[in-house]
Image 1: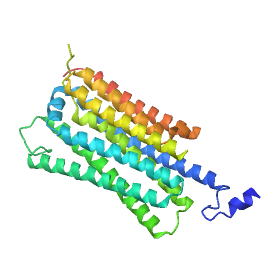
Image 2: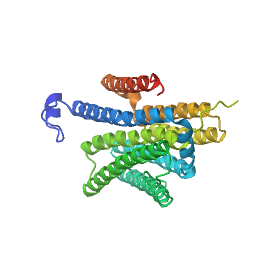
Image 3: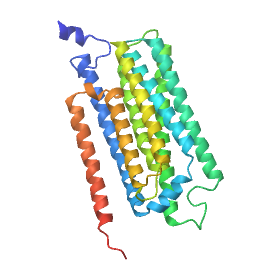
Image 4: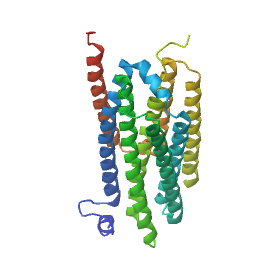
Length: 219
Length: 92
């Protein structure tokens, strides 16, 4: 009886026996994707750590030239967006459509604010000729820091932008539908996983790029 | 149930913001390598909070732990191999 009911569920794909099994497969798939992302960022982090180990003085000097206040504000903005995304996922799990839309909109707003602040930082750095290739007299080690800085924040920003596009898509789809479907709740959960992952990447990028200090003992 | 879940989300958020302020405070103390180490330890604590409470790893299936464990092992091997090369190079 249970299987017959499950088999007739409108969102159930034919390769699954129950909706729970389908959801578990989708969640596992999302984690596999995130694992590949960890390896992608892991390779870039590895490169950064090697150069930071080889040229600690120069990396600390160039790190000090970044805007710490804006970096800290941006970290706070992204952490807040993670909180609103967690609330959106909770609302979706309990099929509270309007509440989910409000929290998704807040996440969207905070995500764009993050990109706006990051864009302003990039603009200021480019305006002050603080980008790779802008000064031929700059030491090679400093060039490496700037290259890594722009590559790391650039790839992270791209991930944020992709997340924002998907959030917009889910928001529009939910707005158009009269009621909240189970599939939307499952989609929101996986989207939440992605968004929190992007947040974790920034949690590590912030001390790596903005808080590098000279290699000396405090005493 | 919903109340406690949203309460946990808020509690985690407050903790994350406190950790962020703590990170900046530690940096302002200019502790050198010790400060860097502390910043990364705080970052790890923040990542743990997000993984456990927001990404709901505390209720995840065992398979996901295996995936994550395998991934971090591969990243660890990549870091180890790269570093062992650079650390053992003789100066020119």
